[in-house]
Image (cartoon, rainbow, N blue to C red; front, top):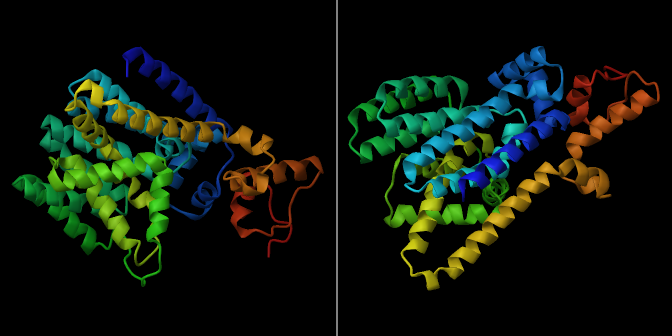
Length: 362
């Protein structure tokens, strides 16, 4: 990808993300987090409200984290690729991933964790060991599922005989276990394996995830396994194994899995560039198709408001749970109502955000 194309797309992307954050009504998950939880996400949402009592203010810190994550990904990709065109393409793919686009737009913990993980990988590549324990400490406090990250770093350090890194990361694993911080494991086989595949396909877009999965597997068999691969593969493997027994929260694993996009592009480049130009056509057509599907997925998210209002399929639209309560509140206020009869418990906190209380509080 050419430099001027990339920066033009990046500018349009920034405008689109600001527009989404400023105009998308509060989601059920955001509303529950805001009123029920005392977490970092809820705290940042309240701080944002203090700056601006709008949808944009609610998501202000998450927007900043999302853009910071893209910047750090760009810097990390420069360490992976020798050609600037590959760095631009990898960053383009990363920022258009549905998981990154929606994560930057809506309040969630994954987009806060992501820049910390990327900064860790970048500082490791630059040889700044002194900052790595500090970043691990930050992850330890902000993300309950950070034990997955620490285990991945332990495995990498042992495989590459890095004693200092192994000792520090093992200490954080033990601390996570001792303080019962981490992922709750339990239940019995319940058939969530296909569900987690569907969630990953949603985060990456289906065809991108299929190639991403293939790339990680190919590196497992015969590729060079760097820190990004260990983090991503460990998180992906844990999530798939756990999904056999229990429902998995995708935000526990997404920030660790999605950082390996440069590896996916590296595998593709290795497969294509070893071939003579006349034999590259199939690879080029396949890559164009995958990127086209990614662009379509991103456009579906960016234009979701228009599609909700003009598609005539409100009941089946994926954004119904966001827009339906918002429209109900507008209708009630137009009718002069100051309270509502709540039938759907999932909407209560969204109505609370719009200052529309229950008529019968019992």
